[in-house]
Length: 432
Image (cartoon, rainbow, N blue to C red; front, side):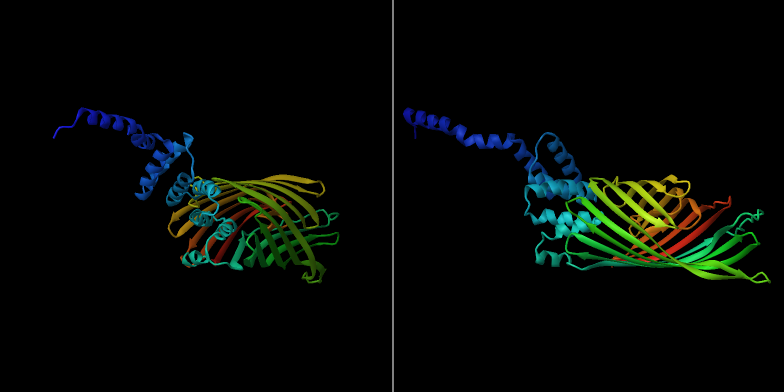
């Protein structure tokens, strides 16, 4: 069969006319950068090729290509690589593009949780359906957890030097040992407020030396110290944490009363109350956490003020490696006024799947000072020149963490005697 010339011409005319229409979408599909990015990263996502997806997605972002699925896939890729800090950056961008998306919220919940941002994680969990929360075993709870620990501290043997000048009246003391027990409880009020309560009881034995115009006396006595601590943390905006705390101390210590002709000394008890409070703010910036804390206190008959700046660095984007640096500017209204700078460093590293280690150092003139938002109070009459420590943490699958901590203190008295103390702490914590 032969095709007539006019039919062939008509066929060619129709084909030529509609060719741009038929081929233009295919041409655009191949050339549109966003479509090409979507195809490439989706294929990598399906293949769980996280490294390639991170490389490809990062190059596309640098080229100005940015859309919801790219951010979501990048966030999930970093999450699978356990870089939770970078995962949060991309997942937050995806969530801003699709605020009602529950998949991004789910990954954000776990990323914050694995970085220790429990309050931030709680807020993201609010976007999940009740059925999904049950599947993931996420429960709205009032109690968040508790911890308990026991510490024993003992000092190297030192004798307090005497005073020959009978015109001087002075009391000196050196610690023999102390033990204390602590119980801490954490719970929530709503989804933006977290409370921490702590009670500590300390029993301490000291050696005393007293010189007055009549004679000099040496005796020992025990100090009983009860402590109550309350901290309130509030997250007004995502990434921000504001907190305030109050720490009260009730101290009962021995005071020289009389001496017998045989030289024995009797004491009476003196009861005082001291306090400390703090206000702090912190902000997360990817692999960095930056914070500031103001502390005011009344310890050992003096008033103190502290300004602390803290920088936390998480190089791998998780808790497998972290470095926390802080510097404290301290001022006390003693006579003469006392000003000092205290530097603190904490290095944490994951040793195995069930063991973390922390090494810490605190250096300066540590006396009548508080640390960690007033949670720890250094109110001994003698100064710690530096404190070094090593902690081992053993998290168990049930949410229980066992801990063993050891600290060495280099102590310097105001009467030119130096000695050291060592403390051992065993503890258990349970996060619900």
